[in-house]
Image (cartoon, rainbow, N blue to C red):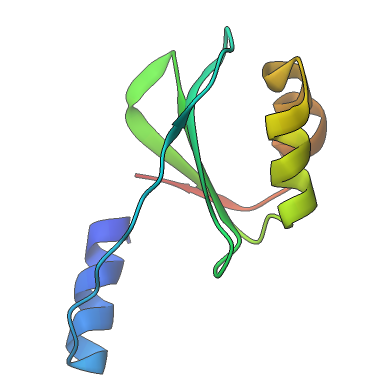
Length: 92
């Protein structure tokens, strides 16, 4: 089930409109183009340069891991070392 289907299901179950607020941050990286983090759900969204139309949503990523990504000089290396294959993800 993709993100849009999940939103429609949530709206149907809750009988309320769901509004997503995204705050994409463009970053300097040879691998990653944009990042968004939701503190309430601990979802880390990443857009990669090699897949510009896809959004990878990593689930239950602690804030300190997100902060580490943003503070690290080599975001691609940090991603490969601390996020990739360590958190469940869905692709939208």
